[in-house]
Image (tube, rainbow, N blue to C red; front, side, top):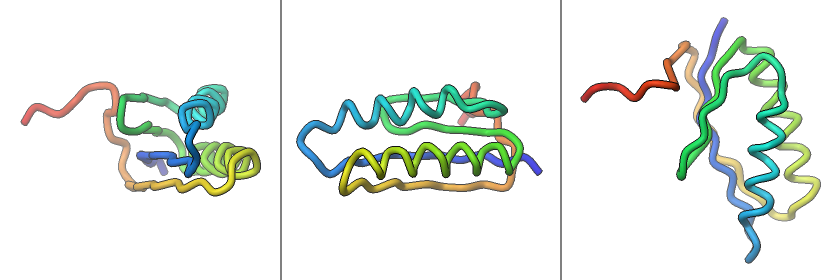
Length: 88
């Protein structure tokens, strides 16, 4: 099953840019997922196991480095085209 996920990481500290950038760079190194990042969030898509493993590993690493940190995630059990915005 392919899924699509939207993630937003919020490190609750004054210097928040570095931890967010680190999180995004770690996600980019994960195999088997497609990823798009914009100013508000990061979207991932791929096979369920690959996406969930990437989210788990990268979230754990972020939470071990920064305390506290909030991760907001939306999971959709559909293979959405994250590269092309919808025409509305």
